[in-house]
Image 1 (cartoon, each protein chain N blue to C red):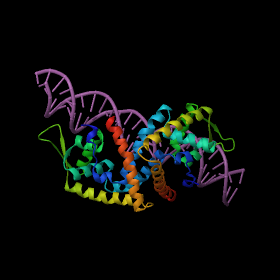
Image 2 (spheres, protein in one colour; image 1 turned 90 degrees about the vertical axis):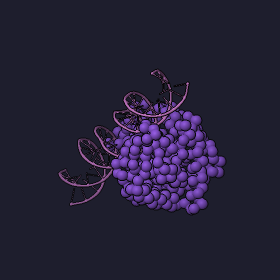
Image 3 (cartoon, rainbow over the protein chains, first blue to last red; image 1 turned 120 degrees about the vertical axis):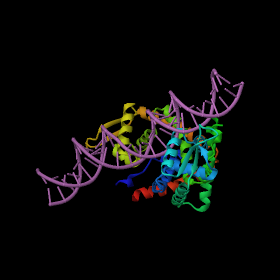
Image 4 (spheres, rainbow over the protein chains, first blue to last red; image 1 turned 135 degrees about the vertical axis):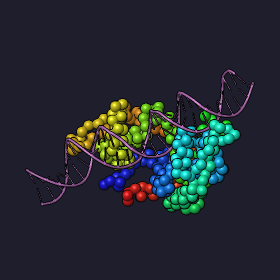
Length: 154
Length: 154
DNA sequence: GTGCTATGTTGGTTGAACCAACGTTGGGTG
DNA sequence: CACCCAACGTTGGTTCAACCAACATAGCAC
């Protein structure tokens, strides 16, 4: 009579916002292990991915691209620098900027994260067929795109 | 050159866990106003819904049904009692229990929340057709059901 | 040179989820 | 009946994500 009593009101179950919240929590739980094993957090993964995909960038540029606050970005880059995943140096051309570059160690951590995160996706979507997974992605992208529009306008 | 620079790595955009997280954030932003207008928070709404749907219950029973921690439930019920949405009395039959009952004021607050939250759902799903909304709900329910299984086992 | 903006940093706050301990109360077993 | 264990509500935390304000340094536009 513990977890078995879990039985939210029908009205709540029917709310898309509630369903999304629960699904996101499921995703969080499943990815948490992968992040913990790599000694990283979500933002660490995002930053490493951005660096691998688009090359070195300043902290502010990374923050804008990923939608991460400047303060949080400073902490993330400091942590990544601390464990050797990233090198940080002053930009010679613009001495306000910190140019962040991924290191060989960072690439290895990123590869490990990629594997763990991919496995978590597989587990998360295990109840869905390949077609359903594509459809879910398509629908979520539409919802998120709408949100990004709202944000861009202010 | 502010929000327009928002452009997450392709690898990130392709992750269902990331899409779910962004979509849940969109839902959070859209529902936040409705909650703020009623001076309530998410758990307040859940508790009021459970009380309306299933009648008076102890804090522990509410917590189990909704998946809310005992400590958080104590705070929520105290807040709801504070603004008159809920009455709390010791159970005569089992004096460990607090029997929580929704009041007329609580019903009114709940009705207001229902309206605001429903409007937020509409805005959230505005880019989707009726068929797509049903499909999204169906897919999310499958993912969440799987998560609930995992939780029940431990 | 004088504003104005951008950058990185430090100092917060908020909401949520979760965990540990404690006194009170009930229930079950000896 | 006495005893121990479980449940309940409460208080005390922690962690993480997201967000805001202020500031010194540095570059840019005029």
